[in-house]
Amino acid sequence: MIHLNINWKKTFLVLFDVVIAAYLVMAITSWNKPMEQSHLCTKVNISIADENENGFLNSTEVKRLLESNGLYPLSKDISSINTRKIEQSLTQMPFVNTAQCYATNDGYVCITVTQRTPIIRVKSHNGDDYYIDDNGGIMPNSQYTSDMIIATGAITRHYATKYLSLLARHVNDSELWSRQVEQINVLPDKTVEIVPRVGDHIVNIGALPTDANPRKRAQKVEEYLSRQLTRLETFYREGLKYAGWTKYDYISLEFINQVVCHKRKESTMTPTPVTPAPVAPAPAETGTATTTPAPPTTGNPG
Image (cartoon, rainbow, N blue to C red; front, side, top):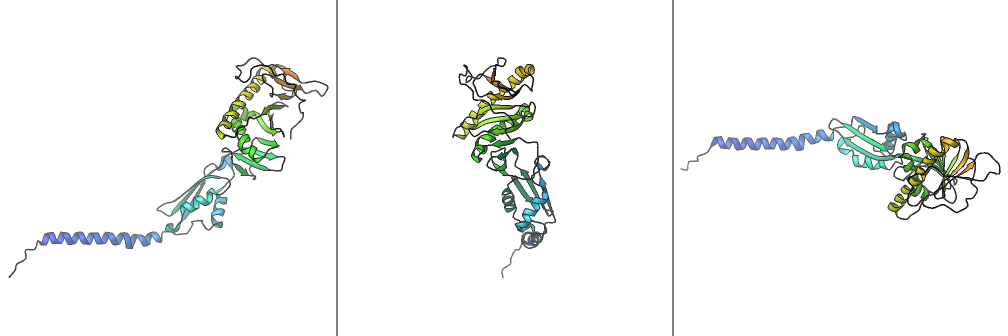
């Protein structure tokens, strides 16, 4: 007769471990999963990060877009909500810069949207009316109103995105010029005129340098604008403080080392060269221009 020596204590512990393991598997696969599937979205939080600053979007418009695409998550199962698809849908909106969406364990879906930042409004002679953002992209016209620079004249979309955006960015980055420049007008030959807020005159800063290479183009335009606007600032400080802000109706910086002004009085006056106080000129501003300037335009460029 065979006698089995069974360690009942060890056997009990093994059986206990098996029961616990089975319980955990059932809890994860059979109990929690149905609860997760029946966990509904009870609230949608939509946040427009810079709503007061830019004003293109509001939460109502975001909700309307998601509803029209069948993506608004309220009362849907959390497990069925595709947050990535919601983000992709929102970034297709013309005024949206970034979009983030995530769901929480308590049934909330949170959506955060940032808007594109317009830096200039373009009203071209060809009828185009749109905004340029800080990345050089075109934004459609809207009911948005702001104390923003307006660009008029012979402006193509290529010129607006490749050159005008660089000019607007340079002006907006300057504490002085962001307050002083009210309007930019582009003539058919790409000469750029500035209409300031202070002083009843127009400033001709010449044509922006061109380059097919984006990096070189940005560098050339930046250097050109820094040189021209420094000359204008010097003339404002050293010339107009004596001559007065109403003496001239047209100021031209087209010619090297010269500021050519046209007196406001409508007569047979010829443009009068005005030499500002000496400043540290850029290397390109050596010598004296010998070109006879064409008669400046007068009046508002529209």
